[in-house]
Image (cartoon, rainbow, N blue to C red; front, side):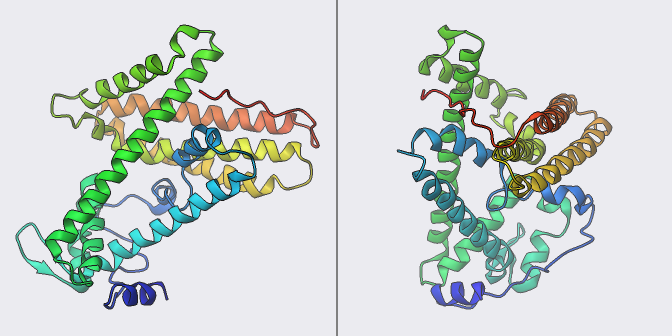
Length: 321
């Protein structure tokens, strides 16, 4: 139905060329647990938990606005995720140009781009599939393909730019609140905290040379880190709902347990892979992720069983920075 609606909207016919499930892609890791640390936007995402608590909560006028702003934003995010899936699973079949200059359509286009796990790995491959697929869909409106490619390239660049702005702002919030907790008031100013956030990102970006691609070395860690944050958010929600009495906590508790287990499982498997590859940078950071994930899970369990229901204790809120 979605393909029919989108096909009518774009003046053409969209056909799903990707298989529903490809159980044995070449050189791919097991679907369990990695499937659950790669699905993020539109499903569950720790980064969005940070955005909602670090940015949205400081911008809504009242608690009543949170439903419209927070839940409404995630509905839009889910709609975007659906469009991305359509672009990479159907739009790409409307025309795909290989590195050799050959133009393929239909199933051949999809299977060429996703010929193996290695071929589809990396940020560039994922972005190019979306850009090509979406550009094909817009092209059915009569807009030249080169122009639609430029439109989608600008769209992706804008998305990256706004995400970077949001991430920097959140990091500044987090740093300021940490410095407040440690009584380091001289570091809580917005300019000082921003300089620390941007400076640390700059060091990371050029950590492996002057090419500016150093940060991409950490891309294999993104899924596990993102879903560790998601598990943390779900655990906090579970503990809070436990204070309200009843069994409402199950709504967040079951997903919290699931995400915690999947994240730890995936992080341990990643650690074995990084050890075999002798990648010291990823080994070190991933080990920290494992420790944090285990700590979060243990502390959440302790807090859950030490929390009484129907609590009248006020909820502490962070200062607006």
